[in-house]
Amino acid sequence: MSVQKNENRQDLNLVERIGIDRSVLCNFNVLEVDEKKFKNAAQNQFGEKVYSQIMHDDQSPIKLDDGRGVSKLVIKHSRIGKLMVSFEKNNLSGREYIKSSLELMVSEDANNVQNLNSVEYQARISNVFKELDEKFGLKIDYSSIRIKKLEINATFFLNEAYEKYRLPILLLIRNVPVKRYGKNKENNAVKYAAWYEANAKLGEEKLETALVKNSSIELKIYNKGKHLNDLGMIDALDKGLMRVEYTIKDRRILQNAFGDDLVTSLTDQKINSLFRKYFNRDIVVPYQNWVCRNHEHLVNLTKKHRKLYQRWTSTFFRECRQYEELHGLPALFDIEDMESVFRELEKKSGRNSARKFAKFKDRAIFEADLLGNTARVKEIISKIEGMYL
Image 1 (cartoon, rainbow, N blue to C red):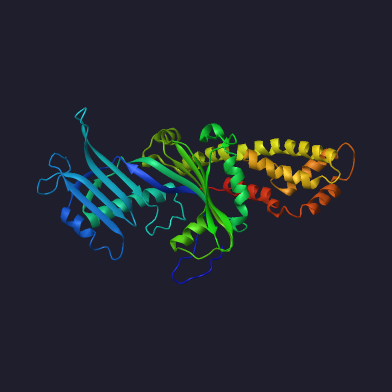
Image 2 (cartoon, rainbow, N blue to C red):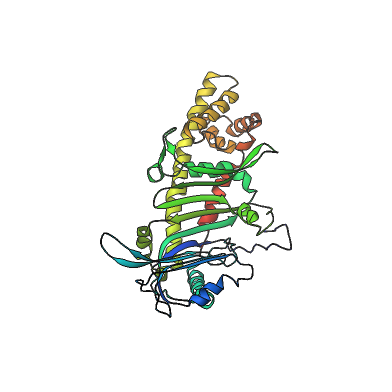
């Protein structure tokens, strides 16, 4: 994949695979704090963005050399992420405990285009805690560190510009199971969100991100190339770069998938299996079922309009457009989908279905957005199904 070069930006060497991205970790213990090193760290970062805070409470079990307790530690670091450790008290039960969390960046330069396999992820965690020790004076026991939230994704180059995949993305995201992600009351379809890049000068909107979510999981499809370009990491790519990402927010899912939520329990095979399980459930199977239903719908629509009108294609196209507005899902998604419709309708009469389909395509002069969409959906699915960690 070529990139329009800028000497201040990076080449994009991507291994296309299913892997780990950002995560939130917990259940680690601060053993020692060098307060002088901690306070000096933020002043000597050579341009790195750092925020740090330390507060005191003598009842805290986290002790400084002078015997004072630490009630709160915060580090926000552009290369690490966000560390928070606090001494908590429950006023009702009287219970006291240490709460710890680390929102971990997947890479040191904020460029998370490359996901990690399980070995690389565990090495990244070790390097971060080593840096917290050496630069911030925090000695931490993370031998039993656990995952609270996990992002896993598949990132891959597309055959065409990302903008051409707007309708395929919307079809896939609108077609996920309603019972899992919630229902839009207006049209009985799945409740989803989408973000667009508006270009007032050209009077157009380009789809950047589409997502569905519930309290446990979030599925997002977005333009990773645009994201990297906005961050200044790369210049414009000559083809699209898509990311399909799951964010696991319920630790019970992780426990079921990995046996527990310990970082040490992550394996490439289990990560791969978890992603594929949800992708197949949310994307592949619903799309395949929709294809079957939609074929029958198109057959019936075609019969109806051919019976009512001698020049039937214009009214056929109009009803297809209206159907999508009302129901959220398209009736006619791709002109090429009509080839199988004509084969079925002309099967008994023995007429030339290929000739009729060609004539139909010639009349679709205002339906340019309905060309190539099915091939693009199949491209997305096949590229992810062909991936390995």
